[in-house]
Amino acid sequence: MKITVAGIGYVGLSNAILLSQNHEVTAIDISSERVALINSGKSPIIDREIEEYLSSKQLDLHATTDESAYREAEYVVISTPTNYDEDKNYFDTSSVEQVIETVLSTNNRATIVIKSTVPIGFTNRMIEKFCYKNIIFSPEFLREGKALYDNLYPARIIVGCNLGDADLKAKASRFAELLAEGAIKKDIPRLVLNTNEAEAVKLFANTYLAVRVAYFNELDTYCQAKGLDASQIISGVCLDARIGNFYNNPSFGYGGYCLPKDTKQLKADFNDIPQNMISAVVQANDTRKKFIAEQIMERSGFKQNINVVVGVYRLTMKSKSDNFRQSAIQGVLQILKSNGVNLLIYEPMYSDKKFMGIEVTNNLDEFKERASLIVANRFENALDDVIDKIYCRDIYHEN
Image (cartoon, rainbow, N blue to C red; front, side, top):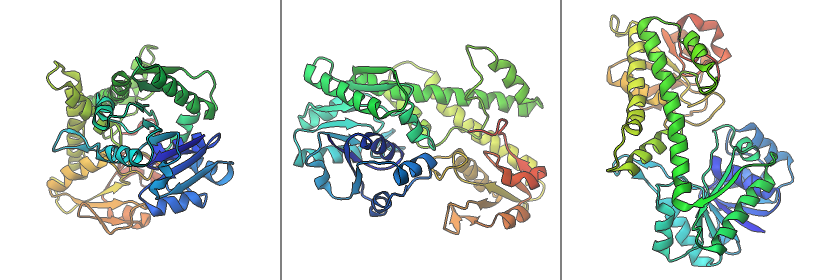
């Protein structure tokens, strides 16, 4: 079977690898650099498993920038970015719509699968806009740095379509089979839902995760304010099987590509529907960043000596990641900068000399020497020798 995957970020590339184990897959992207890397067996993304699959596995995978890749595809998987537009309070779905339009200009037989995260009701609106019924939605549930792993060992496979259309339901079920046959895990729960419900699953699932992050961060905020040991309280709370001892490590806030935008989109989707929690979790993340920034200014001695240098160790959302997108530390940086704090960033993955107007160094020894206080969202062993000047809320040293 011929499959084309549009967009080769974390979602697109991991899906392309999964499907190309058993089918002929063409990945299309606007970046010629990414295309060249994939065709040479290298990964444009820092993910060890993806790199190993590209270099050693027998994959029927080719990458291109040529839109003719859509012409013969039976399935076209769209995994282009849908960033949240702060001005419109809505996802920017223009890249998805552009791909649909391009596909239909050359191929009116393909089943179009939207993997990008979209507002609830979007897929049905696209069916109406383009007068084309063969558009379905399949949410992704991938963690950054473990995108391929989560495709190989998925918790569930969900595909949304018009359940009243028997032909389309069969195509949706077939796509679920394509994902399952490439996975290593067996007996994967599969759900074929109505389209709107499938879209809602993605937003509600990620918002629940954000609620959990915000909860343990607020627990940690209380502990810092009252001088309590957060690790002891978290251990006691999480022994309850209904709560569980997982996803409970305090941070500077939830960040990355999914949780910030998905929570805001779900809040927008509620519109005039009564709610409190969805708005609260968005606000809680901002409150946490403000509290962390205040703690940093207090502990650094900035309020007594404005010449102290606060060093920020890494801009990434997680350890072993190259993703700066919406990382919580950036929100903290903005607050510190607006208060006039002297800042220095250590980020080996960033080539420019300044980020947000703040000096960046790639020299770790220089960074450690110059910083009076070192701020780290996630602790790494490279900081062992300066432990006495670290401010970090990473209790379990895990993401």
